Amino acid sequence: MKRIALYPGTFDPVTIGHQSMVKRALPLFDQIIVAIGINSSKNSYFSIEKRTQWLNTVFAPYPQVIIDSFQGLTIDYCMKMNARFILRGLRSSTDFEYERNIAQANSSLAPDIETIFLVSSPGLSAISSSIVRDIHQNGGDVSKFIPSGIMLDSY
Image (cartoon, rainbow, N blue to C red; front, side, top):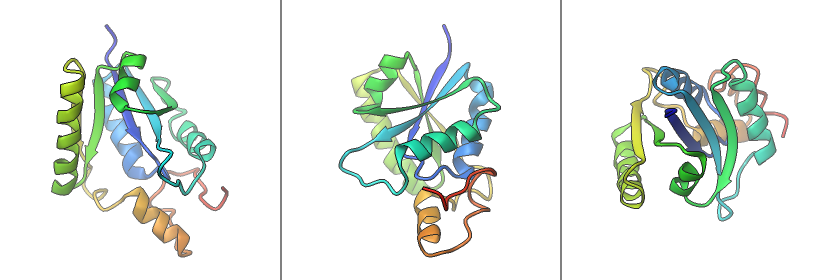
């Protein structure tokens, strides 16, 4: 059976932290699905098309990484895609508390799907999409926080 992991997120925008997480997880899984969760109650800063394009660019060198999007419960999407693992990154103890609660709820809904936590690489724990958006919205240079080849100026 293939070891398929789902790495869900909004990726609004993708950061070097996201990129690092996937690259570090590649040896653990046969396939990683990087999936943009679409939440109709949230307003995204960048379009789904732009985020999908960026993710395809960032992970083009890795054939075992699939880019997709989904609506609804993450656990339902896992079942649809035969993913037995959910990959989540932890930058801080606050992230752990939040992610642990979601992982426990997901485990109650689907005990066969396991959440795997990876701690962020040193130096990347302060990077988040919301910080990158804030810097970008205020005219700052975000180039050191996003993967090379990604241009945020174009929507």
